[in-house]
Image (cartoon, rainbow, N blue to C red; front, side, top):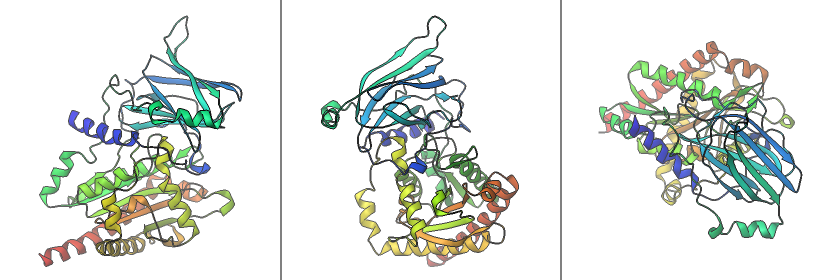
Length: 431
């Protein structure tokens, strides 16, 4: 277990070294509600019990109440203006809605896991600002320990100068003092070695996680709904004994998009299925039903393009622009070999639609395509399934229903069975 935890920590550290991307659209950048942590033991982690802002547009102070002192690192980012604070993994027990409103220099803030052992708080700023002071107070006189961040307004020139490489500290979570987390086994060396038994590997990718809630509605977060669905699908597939099933995440941890793709490629997976539950902006009406997406250079319609753009910017929610696709992947994507993978992906998408439509309400246009980064493994057939819209009342009722989930999982498992049985038989006959 120690080796597995170390592997996930190393995986997570890769996301902390890149420059900033513009944040995702406002519908996906609403401040996080207190994130649940389904499989991570949180009882031993420092507890954050309250957070508040004080001040005005010239000077603003953030205060986080803790049950013990913690180490931290903080840095400012531009375009858009943000402040990122990294701390050891915290058990956030903040009131619902904390961070959705701002004050002074801070428009809003969000928080959550970015890796096992590391949490992050990201502040969206109203304009350029500097960190005038930051410190941790020990508990005293009946008051809890506190992390304090003091911001001051500056002009653009001073802000840009503060971002010079020599003035930007290396930002890594202070995980040394954090207790070990009970993390999932996704992408561990053991999982890679298990492929040797000859069974096909299926990678299930529950979207979002950690600091990235995805869409939210009526108190439900996309990251939790798709994780529950992914676990149910994993359990159903594992019961057959036919496949090695790997989850890109099986807890409330943030996983960068590129790392999700790397999991599938490193395991030479036979299939990659990414699970999401979208929300449609009010101005665009009230869509409903499940939709299956495949990769394409040009989006099939405006809705597919909007969704792909939003999902592709999801990494920025964590505070940093993570590394772009490696050059070798970009080169392969324009190679003719990519065509075969896309053909298999489209074939599975059609098969999946055929199975799901008998048990699940489907979108009026159930098969779509767009340039999703998470589908860009050049050698692994991949689809992204929006199992419903959390913004639609009927869909949300289904998404939280165990009965509906069981029926949807059954149809998806049947499609996977049919697709892989035919593909494995074809591969066997060609050897």
